[in-house]
Image (cartoon, rainbow, N blue to C red; front, top):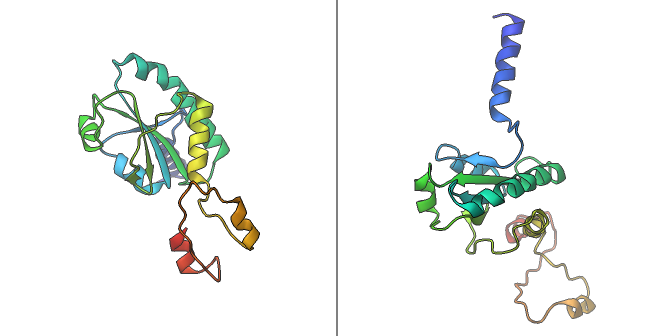
Length: 172
C-alpha cells in the first residue's frame, strides 16, 4: 500500500468516529452500551421526532452538548447523548421511557433513580451536570469544620490516613 492510501484509510476511520456535526451523540442499540461503559457521566435525551416538545428541545440539547465538549474536554468524563425512541423502541423499553422527551442521567453505566425534572435550558442543564461531577466528599480537618455542615442532610463519615489509599478511592 502506498503512503497516500494508508493516510486515506486512517483519515476515513477517524472521520467515522468523530461527531463532526457537534451536538449530542446519536445513541442506538449498537453503540449505547459502549457509550455508557466508556464515560463517567452520560446524560441522555429520549425523544420522538413526532413530539413537538422533543423538537423544541433538540437545538437546546445540541447546544448543551457543544458547551459540555468545550468546557470539559477530558476524554471519557461526560457524554451528552440522545435516543430516537421510534427507531430504537427496545432502548426506550429497557429504560422505562414512556413519555417524550425524557432526560435520564447515567453514572458509570448505571441509570440514576430519578429522571431530570428541571428547566429545559442550556444553563440549567449545564449546572445540573456540573453538580453531578463535583466531589460529594466534605473534608473535615478541625472540629470547627463541623459547624458548617447542614444538619438537615445525612452524612456518611469515613476516616482515612491518606487520600491516595484504595479505601479512600473506593469511598469517594
